[in-house]
Amino acid sequence: MRERIGKSVLVPTMGALHRGHLELIRVAREHAGKDGEVAVSIFVNPLQFEPGSDFEKYPRPEFADEKFCENAGVNLLFRPREMYFDDHSVYVEETRLSEGLCGAARPGHFRGVCTVVAKLFNLLAPNAAVFGEKDYQQLAIIRRMVRDLNFPIEIIGVPTVREADGLALSSRNQYLTAEERAAAPVLYRAMTRVKEMADRGENSVSKLIGAAKNLIASAKGARIDYISIVDRKNLQPLETLRPNALIALAVFIGKTRLIDNLRLT
Ligand code: AMP
Image (cartoon, rainbow, N blue to C red; front, side, top):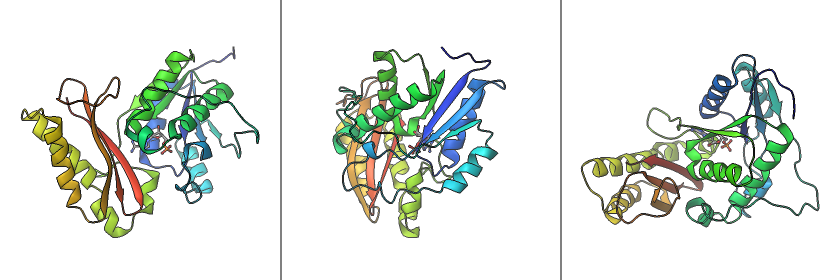
């Protein structure tokens, strides 16, 4: 066990830091206390990018990220060049919560996420780690990994930070052209439309998803990857709305795949 005066809280990221990450750092500081230590890791993890995705072109603004962390009062920036041996052959895989949503759309993605996060936990041995609810499935899977593998680490979730028009902040937003950026808030509009219908008593999931699909279909350049309404606890699809329902979606705007989610009940 390492001796520490305060708590150490880790914020794992892939860099290209924005206000969403800043909120995670703020929450990390709150939990660490003034004597504690906030660590940010930046690693564009090849293992979580499926073949043909944007690993090569993923933004890596190293200098700006370094300044960002400095200004945010981060105590430790961990930015490894490499995380894997050439002949690495051990992975961490969650097998239940990863089945649907992004797990179905991006085979191997969450195996890559769990493996790198487990390695970061072992290397940095934080007392707590902070993740965004924007990647709701990822947060649920990390909580499960920590529970099932007995990592002595508290997992803290942070609500999604959005632009004024509802678009969730994401490092991938910078891929969008001006026209695509104008279309992108349709994800949030579709989810809020569904929430309004749910609030008015509509509980047929097929009707709710149908309404979201129609709205998104009307946006130029938008192509739905998936839209699901699931139980927040086990991420299983629902047929009728009940407490703890969550809408989660992935939509291509042009070539850029955006994800988002919203609690419905
Ligand atoms: P990334 O660098 O995209 O891998 O994200 C690193 C962490 O920041 C993850 O835990 C994300 O869920 C979180 N995150 C990214 N965007 C947002 C956002 N708009 N609001 C809250 N958390 C976010």
